[in-house]
Length: 181
Image 1 (cartoon, one colour):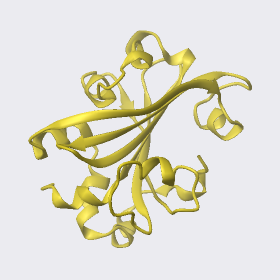
Image 2 (image 1 turned 90 degrees about the horizontal axis):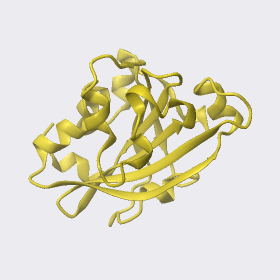
Image 3 (image 1 turned 60 degrees about the vertical axis):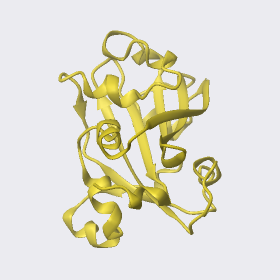
């Protein structure tokens, strides 16, 4: 994923983010917990999970060496039968022990529950960005979305707690604005 869409989240950026999305995007707590409280029925749909070599950009972000392997996991988070979030996690193979053990076998369980249940994990400052149809991930995010928008806003953070950090990006789909936040 190109880093060119990402920038640090500063107070002045809040005006660029549509009002209905601001609280979702700037919240530093568990998105999984927030969705569970806002939805009568919450679920995770696994889009794909592959093991591959990290790109040079990903290797730089995750402090990996050339040819290091990672798990690339894409999911949609649902409220009832409606997708409300598209999430992509990059999990270095070198991180799959200690605190991140088992993240490669989560299936349709939310990563957020495991990550936020560990008070020892550190989260980097949130970065925010916007995906448009020209971005390679846009079509992945729009799977099962009825009304495709011109763009979607998202956030990402690194989570530290093992030999290597993991990177989680979350994009808010149009239906998220119908939920209380």
